[in-house]
Length: 273
Image (cartoon, rainbow, N blue to C red; front, top):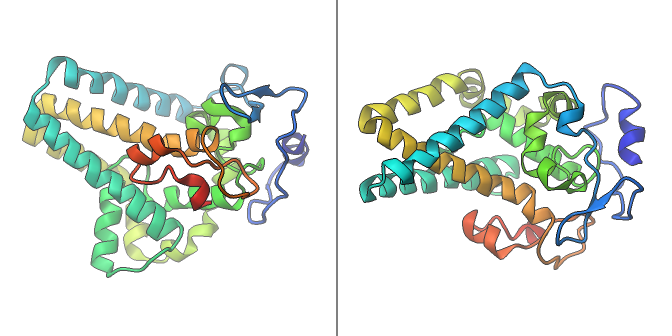
């Protein structure tokens, strides 16, 4: 009901101000998420809306990464390639959690600029977007957790919070199109440059992978990217649907040991919120 009333107002949405947290009471259209106490309603089912070129492009990218990544263990298995892919998985994954999440999104700590920028660059090689984009989305998530303005609210179910929100560019722009919440980063030339030239830097990374290890290693690199995708997405989805709630945070954030194991500790998500 809150979602329908808010979005009926049209644009612009009041994304700079928090909304009252809705209860988990069962809406007439809601269904219980499997093995969870959360009742969810998917507001924009993928087959009932118009898909933009951006939506199809992202779907094609995600599908390609997963399909090509499957060739790594099935066709190009070797322990040296596995070890190299694991090292890149860890370094880029730490770039996401250490840099994008803890340092940039939450400003939890300061470090020398050379270390801050190096860690952010490793995070960018996880292929989850430039720092300004990722940080802006996450700040909106924390400001609006589990309200209709949350980009990936668990009250829209597992599919939406895990992946669907990234495949609906119209809804995404209404939730996260205003980047004023990252003005502190945008004024720094390094982050402004990375926002403008994200594709060039990531293309250079893939070119280096091909130059060093050819197609076999490129498949392993894609496998690592695909795994890190899901590990990051599980923090948004599984850690808001399944697990323990040690603190009454007013949202559905949960502590999930298995997400914590995969995501460098990020699964202790109720503690985080």
